Image (cartoon, rainbow, N blue to C red):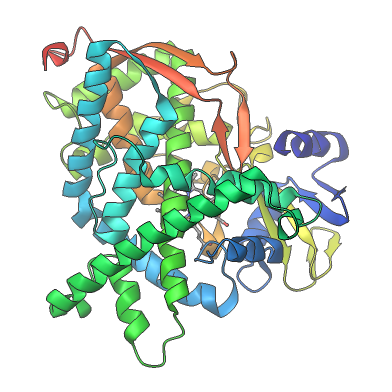
Length: 450
Ligand code: HEM
């Protein structure tokens, strides 16, 4: 679907119109107009009514799907939970999760087995988010059998299917995929209820937490009990699921794209190993926040990956007021598809736009990165609804990438189906990648014997 829209924007220009069944949609590929629209929220533009209703039917309506006053109240709590101070305090837990992940990959490398890259990365991202947002060490990295991901992984593909269905057939006929979704949603909601029960227990046992909640779930439960609050039990549960959904695929797919692109560009792989060796010294991974934060080339590689492979190449919005965008009238209720990748692949904004060149994100002295380019490449969206998890995601990417290139070499990547294609199931993933690692021979700390 996103390829078709991108091709239409090449053919018909940066603003065009198309239909899916009875629905008319306006496509916008101009980064300035997209920026204007994303900033004009929550009042000018909203998430679509269809998205909100489809999520609601699945028993979920958290900060991602909510609009208006409900969104404002939830966004405030989410922002507090993901602010830099919280992420900083949480770092020791992230380091523990990264160490477990290192051990898992060292074991794969020692045995020379090919493993499902995205499935492994999702174990990492779910463990990190559950720790930060809910104070729970779910440790799916070291679990066998069914994990919470087993249920999460059914939500986005079915959401996508229902959003693009010509009519809501599932209200009349439940196909096998709809019945499977119901089963997985029931299990997911049961796991979420358990997380909430445990957090309530913590608040009862340690009443001081009420004055200074340590994570999102505690903050939401305290707010829920505050007289006059508009937050409901449904909102609390919805936001728990939302954090798991929003934090799982996005970061895992970005890391998978990064690993795939780096494997195609051995010069970049070499520089990543060099930087990891220099910054981490004798360590297997960045055990301290300042180490992770000083991995500038690694961070540039993440930005370059997201320029070419943003996990949300299309953001769909709905005009909540009648607007003029550029010289185009957008009546209230119009659905608009923002093609965020078109600007970042255009020669008007980036030299050699098709090439994978992390260096372009670094200043001439190798420090920092260019913010003017970030206004064109918007992998985290923009404006008041910009992704609240972006700092956490960038930190996760730095931790995993440096751990990988400090300790291992990629022996092979085998895509399922023979080629690496883009699959859009609400988020854009590469084809499933089977990866074989081998310990780096030249790390100087004997990974192969650990
Ligand atoms: C590389 C990783 C990630 C990418 C590329 C990404 C991208 C995005 C994008 C494009 C949006 C829509 C923004 C907009 O409408 O302007 C978004 C929203 C959101 N993201 Fe992320 N995200 C990532 C990781 C995370 C993580 C780790 C979390 C938290 C656990 C998270 C939580 C959210 C939430 C809650 C929203 C909804 C915000 C709102 O509507 O107010 N994301 N993300």
